[in-house]
Amino acid sequence: MALLVAGLGVPAQGEDLAALKKRLLPGIKGEDNRQIVDSSEYPWSAIGRVNTRIGGVCTGTVIGPRDVLTAAHCLWNKRTKRWLLPEAVNFLAGYRRGNFIAHGKVVDYTLADPLITPDDGVRFRPNDWAILRLAEPIDGITGTLTLGLSGTPVRTYLQAGYSKDKPHILTLDEGCRVYDKPNNGGLLFHGCDAVSGDSGSPILGLSGDALVVLGVHVATAPRGDKESLGIAIPIDSIADGANPTP
Image 1 (cartoon, rainbow, N blue to C red):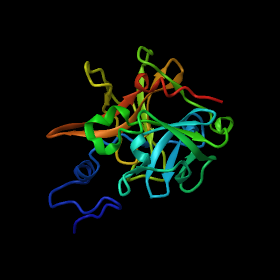
Image 2 (cartoon, rainbow, N blue to C red):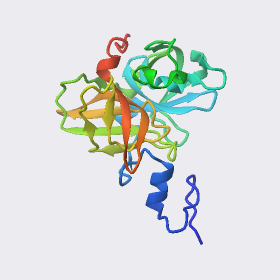
Image 3 (spheres, rainbow, N blue to C red):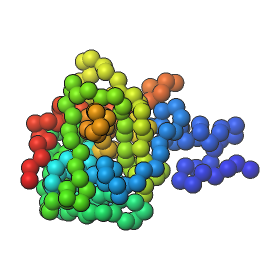
Image 4 (spheres, rainbow, N blue to C red):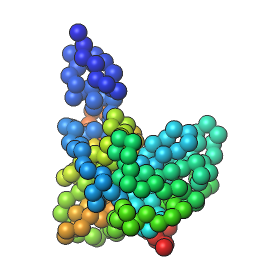
């Protein structure tokens, strides 16, 4: 009898569970290296779920007292072809199984260019970032993560987010690869295990003893028989709009 994997489906004959997960979760590169972390403890407390009234779930990072970095496509209503109103978006810092350490109501958000939308396809990709503005500061509870521009010395790369198959727990891929590709159109490519739901999650670097945000994960690019590539927007591309304000 074929095994049933909760939330994933039934494997085809001769297909093992690892192959099934890879097929249905194309953001997993090779082995699934995600591990559960305690989202109530810093630095993971500065990461949370971005929830929308239309049922969307993404990941966001606290980068200032009232500022949360995420992916812009999380705020796009595919049905109405409009950006969501700020009040339709909430941020739950340190979320875990229905609990959270801070709730932020979104009162405004910044986009790279509101006139370029997810429906514009490839042209939208470098613009796929947003900064949510919360009604009240939450950094005293969550802490913040520092932005790291290109040239920041990094000895380990990491990614943490709320994956589609694990939407109620924060998982971490530690020691994943970030690829230095020239002429990449303002994008950052990585090999971290990030799937749907991880959109908006931070690509992190351990610089000295501190974690810095190097980019925001926005998509996965399949490459036929090769491992898929994760796509992120580097902080350099966001820097002009990502200046946290008190």
